Image 1 (cartoon, each protein chain N blue to C red):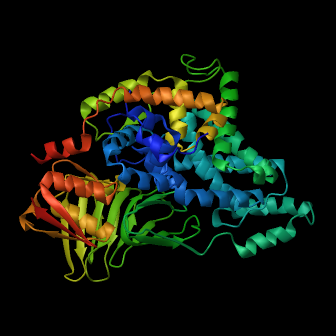
Image 2: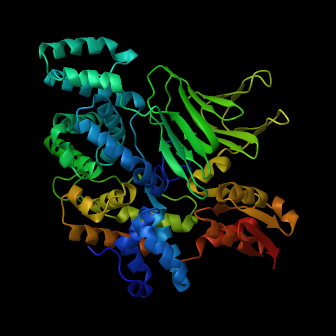
Image 3: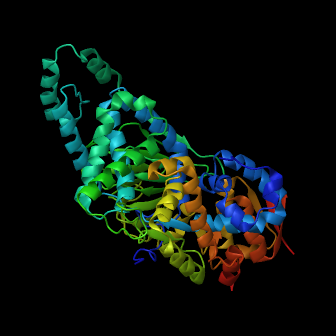
Length: 220
Length: 345
């Protein structure tokens, strides 16, 4: 449990604060995505290669939170991404490529997991749903040690769906509607899942004026 | 779904209300999105809520997820397999020529020829017009960072008041070249077949798969290596090539053609990309704020410049940083246009 929690930030491959990732999706990537998506729709092979590489990485990251079976994951990724090309004539109807792909991928991955009975754990999840990873959660390292520890513990107690909702909303930067669409539940249910999760985390916060305290202590 | 409430309702919000409010979350998730227009205006007008807002933000920002990514090789292999599946399923696949793929294009070319006429015009169109702008460039204004993904999916975090340009399409086997002005943090995809070069006005860094920081400010170029290995090339005759190991930091001043070489904690020089400075001196903080926010600082007591701050200075915005400085140094902050004076209390 928690084997990654103590790694220092700034090392390759770990984004400590999802905000950094989201800025990428927000600004530079969004327009580029739309442009690439349109080009794939018109049959542009080169754009397809670009799209494949970009989404392979993102979907892989999402899928790894739900299964450790790399071969199965690769199958699901490939099926998802090949379907983009074979269905390219319909792509112009997709409003939000990012959440469309997450949704398609999740559906395909779950189908494969059920078929192979490789669902990790049913505890905390709907029947037939895999458990959303609890070991991949990172807490900001610059928080006070005791606060961090309490946050870590609180994160571990969340349900699989709560963790997935937090991932989609705060890491992938999606809206409640999009997260609901991907998880196949109502927007209202998503609100409920999310606010319960966040308030549970809040309970662990004992409200010191953190940053300033850190600084003053550091200056001694 | 309610998109934002009126200011009055927010004035009565508790900490829990803020944390669970979708519109407030939008602001935390997309600091430059639509919600920011509202909150950037609302927050300063409600100083009594400042502390609560800070705590709500901190909670929402404190949790992240480990990134689990495939290797570049795995991605490329998967793409190759996908292309085969696609090619097997339809004869209309046309590939753009590249050195590595020429053999396969010929084969698929035959398939295309069999289905006479279909898409031939399109093919010619693709081959002649190309799909990328010749060059891409990004520039950041004062006070803003930006993450740029390069064509090979290497990541560059561009610091404020900096710019980068590079060719829009990188061919396999050719050198990957980037021209940088200002400061950038690079996380480079390893690729033995093609070298990665970062040029600044004064020198060139050749990358051998790695993360490093390069800063071209105030007439000097500074390179700090975090992981991997890089080779630094200087203008002919000035200095021989230098191969850096992790933790190495060099500062090159072309005016004096002098070279300082120290060993350091690289993270302290790359933490700006996460919007913070680690254990900086006061002088370093002020230099940073001057470079990235276009301000001039005057220290009433110059000896303060050498004072080392033992913790982390958050740089999310200029005002936060100034507030932290005033508290820690016990000074008053006087702002006059672009000049900021730190005056003893």
